[in-house]
Image (cartoon, rainbow over all chains, first blue to last red):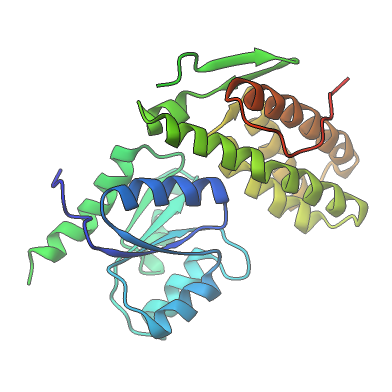
Length: 132
Length: 133
């Protein structure tokens, strides 16, 4: 795993559970990322209107607007190609079709470890970093 | 590193192996995870109780789903499965007569676990000192 690929990256975390928010914040800020945390899909769309991010980490089931609907808006209405990784409690085979349909780039199964979180992000972000 | 990943007492068993995996030797991090869990659990209990009074099954479903995230990190024996069942009943609006008892059981178990965690992590409790019968 590249040790510094998270350093300086602006990451938007959409997660309504404070325990998960705190865990992700602690892990990613310790690796040098700059985190913005919101609690639902509507706030994701609001953030994207005035800020730029390298990655969105988004819980699938959030209040007001869930992760799938939010991702659909980001792809189809805003036309943004920013990588989006979903947090899901479900097995990937149960979610895979929906992940593809709504334009999500990957998933992280909860509960996650530091390693599984970082590897999932790396698998999405590192090819983009070197594909310029 | 948490010395003992399995806490027992007050009729509950709390498995902290996920916290241990996440925090390793970072005691501040494990303390923070537990503190955040303790800070937020009373509001989940309250949310479920209010939803029950209002017979708002959609809100019971949402609160149970919300609780699952925390309980997948702080593992209280049997409670994750219990909350999943509660979530299913509320979502499908089936077995509604079982929901009040399930919310009582949830409150009792999570309260015991909260006291156990507060005691072991030497965290000052900012929640009601309810001792389950």
